[in-house]
Length: 398
Length: 110
Image (cartoon, rainbow over all chains, first blue to last red; front, side, top):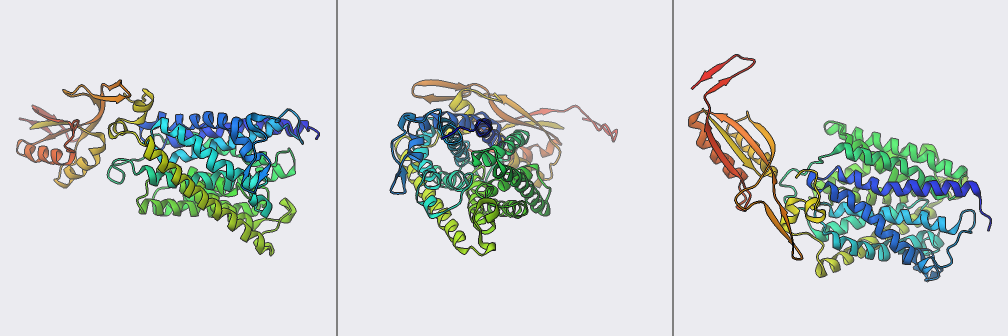
C-alpha cells in the first residue's frame, strides 16, 4: 500500500476532466433541442452531477465497491465513505472513489436524452436517485467491484457496458414510458443551437482522454495506449458517419460530431486491450452502425429524442463485442477472437447482453413506478411553453 | 392589393408555408415575434404558485396579394394554422398603395 505521486497527480487531473464531461453532455444535448428547452437540458446534466455526488458518497460507492455479495452487489462496508481514506494502493482510496463518482454522474446525464423537452424536474431527481442506486451501482459492481462479470473475465476497460449500455438502453426504456413529445413527427423539431452541440462535443472529446486513459488508474504505457486509440477511434467515427450522411445529402456537422462520439463510445471498453489499427476499424464501424441505428429509430418513429440509445447504447454494445474480437495479449493480457480466443468473445457477448437486458428492464420498471405515482411528465401547457419557463422560470426567448 | 399579416403558432409555419406554396403563393416575409391575446398569456399553476407567461413566441407572416386572392390566402392560412385551442393567432388584412420591385424597377400603384 504505497502511494505513487505520479499516478495520484494523473488520476486527480483525470477526475476533474471527466467531471467536465457531464456538463458537456448538457451542452451537447442542449444544442439539439428547441430554444424553449435549452436551459432545462443543460441544467439536467448539472443536476445529475449534483444528485449522483450525494448518492455516491452516501450509498453508491459501497454498493458498487463494497465486499462482494453473491457476485451481484457490494456490501455496506463503505457506507458514508467509512474507511475510505487518504491512503491506498498506488492512488488514495478517496481519489479512486471520486474517479468512479464522475462516471456514475455522466451515465445519468446521458439518460436525459430519452426524456428531453418533457420531463418533470422533481420526478427526474427521484428517478435519478433510484436509477443510479438500482441500475448503475449493480452494473459497476459486476464489472469492476468483484461481481460476476469481472469473475467471469469480461473486459470493460473504461465503462462501455457500465456507463454506455446502461444509459443508452435505459434512455430507450425511459422514452417508451414517458411517451413522445407533443407534435413529434408532425412539427419540425430540428436542433436550434448546433454551435452549442459542437462545443459540448469538443468538451466530450477532450474529457474522453481522461475517461479512457484515466481508467488505467496509473500514469503508464497502458494509459498512453488508451489515450492514443481513443483519439484514433473518435476520428475514424467522425469520418465514417460524415461520409455515410454525405451520400444521402449534405455532410452535417451534427453527423460528424455524433460520429466522433460513436467512435469514442465504441473504443471505451476496448481502449486498454486493442491497438491503434484496430481502433480505426472499431471507431469507423461504430460510426456507421450508430448512424444506421439512428435512421432505424427515426423510421420506427421512436422518440428517444437525442439518440443516447443509437450512440451510447448500440455503440456500447458494439464496443463490448469488438473488445472480444480485437483484444491483443501484448496490450491488455488477453487475446480476442481474431487471435483465436473464441471464449473471450462469448464472455463479452454474455456480459453485454445481460447488461442490455438488465438496464432496459430495470429502467422500464422504475420509470413506470415513478410515472404511476408522481408522474414523469409535465402538463401539456408546460410542455408547450417549454421547460425553461415551466420548470426553471428562466428563458432564452421570452 | 392587400397585405395579409398572420400571427401563427411557430410549429405551424411549415404547414402554412407548404399549403400556401401549393396554392401558388411563394413570396412571403416572416418574423419571430412575441405577443399575447385577450387571455394575457398563459398561466401555469404549480402547487398554488402562479407562473404567468406573459408574452408567447409566435411567427408573423406578411404576404402581399391581389384583391381577389385575399380570401384564398386567408382560408389557406386559417385551415393550416388552426388547432382549435386558445393561442392559434390572428389574421389582419390592410390595403397596400404602392409596390416597387427594386431589381425589376416594376412600379405598381393601386
